[in-house]
Image (cartoon, rainbow, N blue to C red; front, side, top):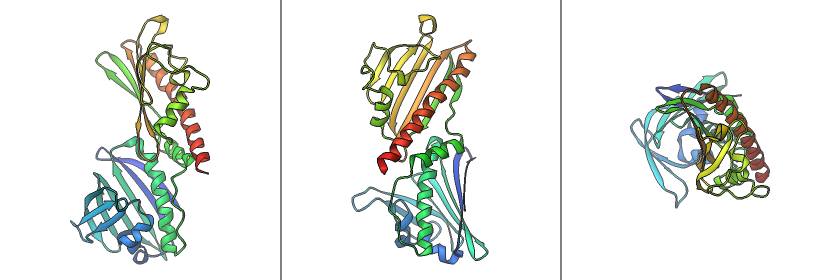
Length: 295
């Protein structure tokens, strides 16, 4: 049985995963602390000094870059905690009948990454489960797009944020997707059915929503940036800016910002709904395509 949750601790995000294992803490402890066992399920090769204050080193193969952290807790067979690239990790083993409860937590700053982290760690912990059971190793695979999207829904990561600005308001969405930048750009531009995006032209429909009539493209850097003015009654009222960059996991990070003038709070509220309704079908379609491509 696995339970996952996302909460906030000291202004940071904390992903917490609880999983019941059929083996006592004494058997599971080597699997979560000894490098030869960690290599079976942890997403990096690990070397460590098994003591509080000891150094822990992470690398990705013989030619991969190394990073180091420190061990903040090492209490066999109960608690192992350390940091990695500024993120905090904690593995607790609690006796539970003939087995134990594994409580894994990952504390980080990048809230939109939470679905990628949750789906990735779920795959890792599936492999840990096989390891302590003595079952053969599974085939390493990327988390499914559908699993990623289920965590987006569970953790409430699809909603935008409304903010006041000196000139009025803005609505901001930041969304982790499951396909790379080029694939997302291709889905938005739909070049097979629409003219290529160019400065001074109307943006492809994928970048627009009917609630906010689009002016012409004013800034463009394919496949990472497209910006245009929205103009009710033919007059510019604010800007709509799409940005794509490398994100966490295997996909692009989408950032969308719409600005508007003071006195148009109704438009701000409408933007929160309109862009969520625009982004979520795109995200689901990309996730389904990612899964089909992986089959």
